Length: 237
Image (cartoon, rainbow, N blue to C red):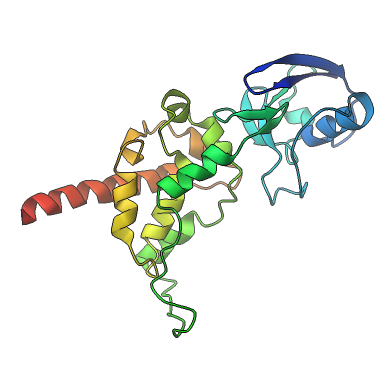
């Protein structure tokens, strides 16, 4: 099988071609590992668990962001050819390793970090697992920050200030958490420049999420709540 792999540091690089033996039940991560072990030990890439739990092996495979450990070659190779690149919309450290700092920086900008409403010395607050808000909060809680949705997002590609689907989904989770001390701060963060209203609702984030989450629905929820707040403030003015 012919495998074209992106090589280079930063924005400068080119594809290098390798011939890799086909094996039964072979994943794309198996292919990349074979190249590093047997063809070129200088190839740089990132992985950890190999079983679809950590998301660190995400790469572009034939133009689509995927977890390479769960992507079987037989399902994605086109005429016996694989093209493997680092995740789109992120700076490249080297070869297939993308710099995740901008991705997590946008979590902070979206106030997607829990603001505690109690201390460890207070009694544990009961949570109504059947409430509508808790269902909204739980809908995105399985996000593992693999950045597949971020790489799939055309809005991020055209607008570097856009917070992106993962950060906005996390913001929606916290907004709906009854233990969150400052939900208004979340709405402030996501309604500003690069916030939820920049989303064009194309749905690539939901289409390609390996955990079958729905960031588009979370973003729609943020749009709805920020818009309702505008009308409430006008009414109270």
